[in-house]
Image (cartoon, rainbow, N blue to C red; front, side, top):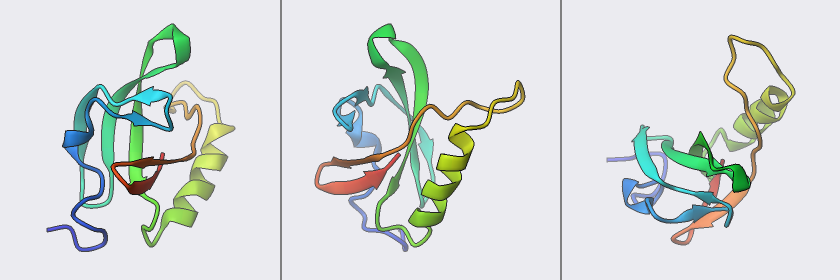
Length: 97
């Protein structure tokens, strides 16, 4: 049972939904009690990417957003590129990505 968020948060059943009306959740890749990761596509190019969703009410949400903002500016061949971050709501669950 997930202790830090509601049982309705970040679920594999969200495949077929959209995050922020622009990132299709194509496939559940995995998750933990704190987050879920889905295969998605970036814009019109249909470039494959992953999107990590966390509940907006997570205790460490502000720290994660700050880290994602910092990571967006980083570029190195050994780092995964962070393209963007934001807020969305899926099935009445507010999330950060």
